Image (cartoon, rainbow, N blue to C red; front, side, top):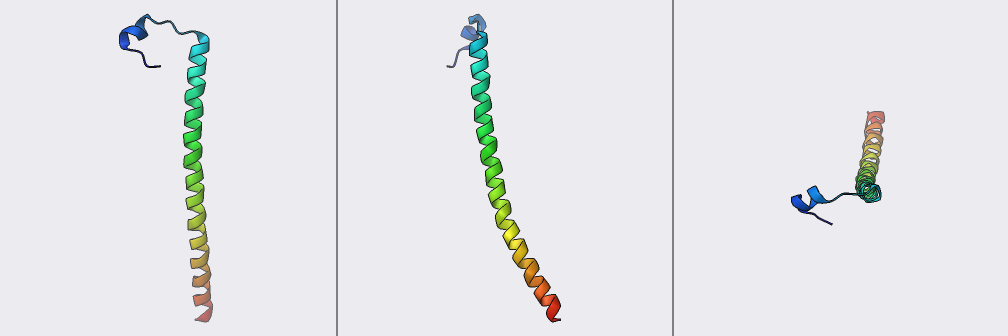
Length: 65
């Protein structure tokens, strides 16, 4: 519910309205942050697999020489 500046100045919010608004915003932000963390974890897993393979290949080359 979007209010104009005039309506906002004359409207009294109850504790319940304020609390539910804060809780809703917090849930949205938590969901957003969860998505970011999941994406970073997935990306890190791919990078870690690549790193492991490169180090294994490097060790193989070092052992041959």
